[in-house]
Image (cartoon, rainbow, N blue to C red; front, side, top):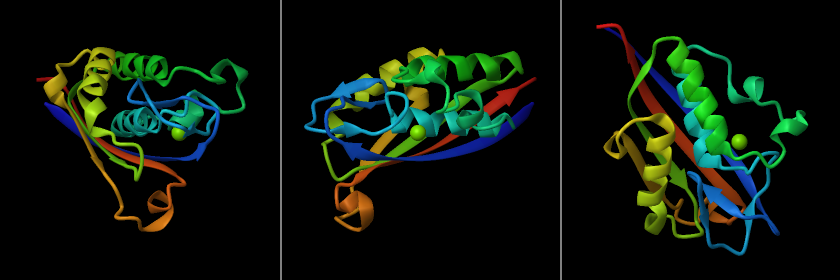
Length: 160
Ligand code: MG
């Protein structure tokens, strides 16, 4: 059996007048994230981890921010496309693990809903999707509430 690890990181600044979408869940917030798509930073990190593990180019290659097709795109739909891409290459997902760094808002009440959405998109059981959230103890850009950072790792396998 062949196994591969992948990692992905993404950062988006806060902006006003947009919905805050994380892991496909719209979270009540007085601000959203700036970005060409729905700016779902958590899902973007996960997509890059999947693509990296499969040795494929990053999400900027598949979904360029110069392409109007992807303006305000639902990142969960893009994740489904990434999943199809890696499935085509014979890969299955063992598990993925994601950490979100955010000073605001409180992420933990929404983690179960995110796991349901992400695991459905990836056709795996929710226990194969880890999601943790932490603050940066008021340090740095995240600590100043300027945006949100997400980091993801995945393990893929194929063959027997
Ligand atoms: Mg992004």
